[in-house]
Image (cartoon, rainbow, N blue to C red; front, top):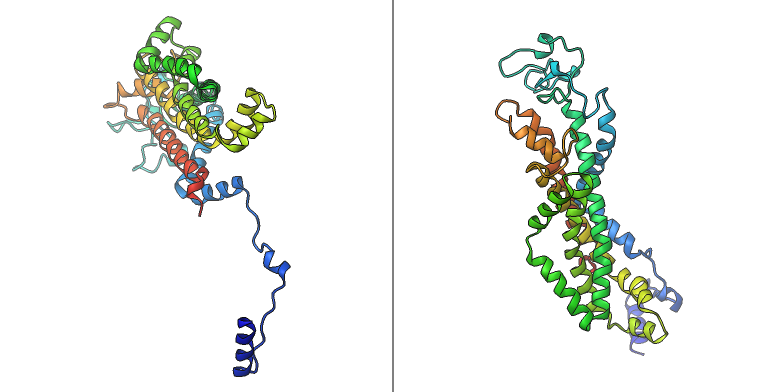
Amino acid sequence: MMKENQVQEATEEHPGFKPVVIEAEEKEEINTEAISYSRDAWRRLVRNKSAFISAVIIVLIAIMAFVGPHMNKWSFKDQDIKASNVPPKVGILEDVNWLPFTGVNADGVDLYKERNLNENYWFGADKLGRDIWTRTWKGTQISLIIALIATLADLLIGVIYGGISGYFGGNVDNVMQRFVEILMGIPQLVIIILLIMVLKPGLLSIILAIALTGWIGQSRIVRGQILKIKSSEYIMAARKLGAKPGRLIGKHLLPNTMGQIIITTMFSIPSAIFAEAFLSFIGLGIPQPNASLGTLIDAGSKVVDIHPYQVMLPAIVLALLLICFNLFADGLRDALDPKMRR
């Protein structure tokens, strides 16, 4: 009644006034497009400039890791003693004196002309005459493969172990967590070094060494999330309807912890890359003539005062991978966190 009086008074004061009548159906109509959780997370991830740029750089490096070794005629293990320690040289940049791609060493000598080399080494060659460009991208490929396989193993073991421990609880959880605490009490580096010494350095031994203890963090994250949500009403309803533990974990509990699992996995990748590089740097990684970023940095660091270009490219690639994966993981965490929704 009060609204009708207000409308009448407004009409008398302003003869041109016409009230807008809104039907009940129009009141309930949603005028904006419904956005799913995954689409909203993707939109926020794209808006995060550092995360988006990091993702682009990671993709470019991954592409170059598989394309780069085939961009010239040398393989990663081809040797030419005439090309020993030649500096970088790129044809279109050889006349730009302020760039380090002229083929001239620190003494001002063009080693390519002096040694009658007809092919250019874009990032120089090592002491055995092996192309650093090819070996760097081949090493990046091996480092990425090791990191991805080890991370997938960590993901599989950690999710299964943490899911079982968190769901059953009680004595099962106590026993499983005591085993985890024993592993955590032993320095990870000691376990990795002992395993590699037993299995001998190589691709398989490094993957097993990294995966052996890398799953612990993932399992604790999954366990904590499942302990938090297993008492939810929809879990209790599914249990009353006769759902088996395997179905409850696989269909209800794990999907609701997927955000944390993805984030932890993304942070595990740079950790695995660094672990492989460190092991290779101290001589427990990929054996020669194979290459990884760690072995290349180790070899280049020994002659960094004389030939700094030999360590420059692999060090830059390793630094970019570690920084970009961490920035992307940070952005992904913010995108998947419902509390960050605007």
